[in-house]
Image (tube, one colour):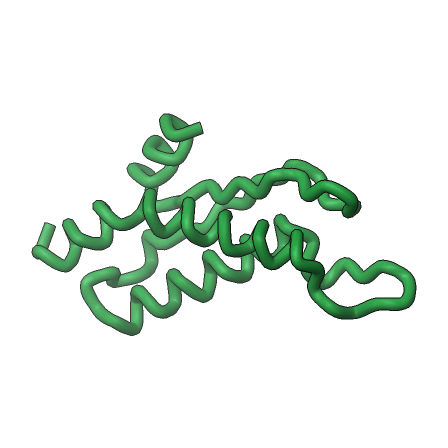
Length: 103
C-alpha cells in the first residue's frame, strides 16, 4: 500500500484507503485525491487539500449512506474517517514540506 501511495504522490495524486468497518455496509475502497493544481506552499492550498482528503475519507467510510432509522454517523465511521485522514496526511507531509521549502 505505501508504494502505491508514494507512486501516486509522485503524480500529484494521493490514494486514500478506507478499511471495511465491522457491522456496517462499508466495503474496502480507495479514492484518488489530486493536488497537482494546488500550491501546497500556501495555507489556502493546504486547506483545500485537507478538504479533499476529508471528502474522500467520508465517502470511503460510508458517511452519507444512511441506514434505516438513523442519519447519525456511527462511531465506526468516525474512526474510519479519522484513520483515513491521518494516513493520507502522514503520507503527504513530506510533499507539503518540500513545497513549503520551495521544492
